[in-house]
Amino acid sequence: MDIHVGDILRMKKTHPCGSSEWLVLRVGMDFKMRCQGCGHEVMLPRSKAEKNIRKVFRDGLQVDV
Image (cartoon, rainbow, N blue to C red; front, side, top):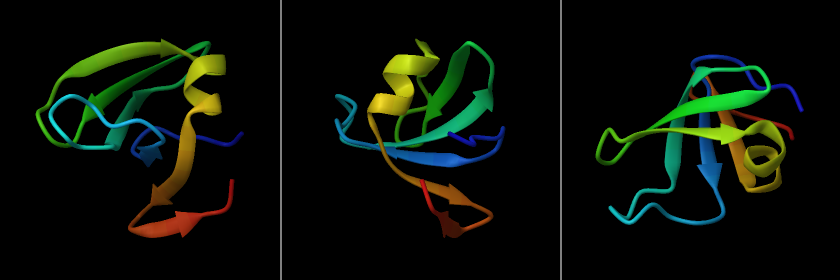
């Protein structure tokens, strides 16, 4: 899956704050992401993150996954 720093990911599950969109801060074996609702930052293994992605937005446009 082609994910870049600066992409916004819409995930299957929502964060406890209610937001389901995350900003990608770092890409590698792990993804570092920031919640767009509350600003909480998490690191997820790439395999777990890719499994839970619904949509990818790059520069405001939806990207095919």
